[in-house]
Image (cartoon, rainbow, N blue to C red; front, side):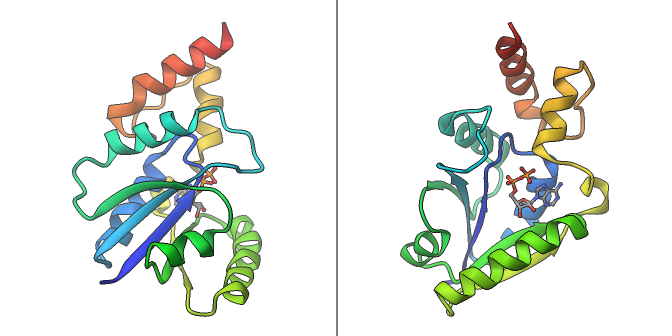
Length: 162
Ligand code: ADP
């Protein structure tokens, strides 16, 4: 069974992530979306909220599982039988960091490959931070995040601001 893992903070999940998830799920038997627990950047949404938003957005995708991890990604991948780490590349700016991570992960476990997928041009400008910024400034996020979680995101940011 070909198992891929797609790691990220998903704070919150955007349609850019969903696009990568669907494309990756189409070329493997099982895709594990792995939510980072102890990330260096502080997240707005709690782990439970980030996982729950992914679950709401991905109920249609049968071979997609949602999990969380802390510690080394290669350890998580190995213990889940995943031989491939999927990453989305939006722009050259993503490339440098991702190249470093891919080499580092390869050094730690040579049996695990990193697979890069180019972002859908419709979403190549999109990031979780942009979504949060937009909501904070009163902008529209229709089409940028899954419809199922739009109100959850808006509510959370409204409450944080109060
Ligand atoms: P962000 O960079 O938005 O904070 P994450 O840390 O959750 O997102 O990123 C998880 C993965 O998703 C990374 O491989 C990242 O490059 C990729 N990704 C993020 N946004 C997009 C997008 N709009 N299109 C394609 N891939 C993306």
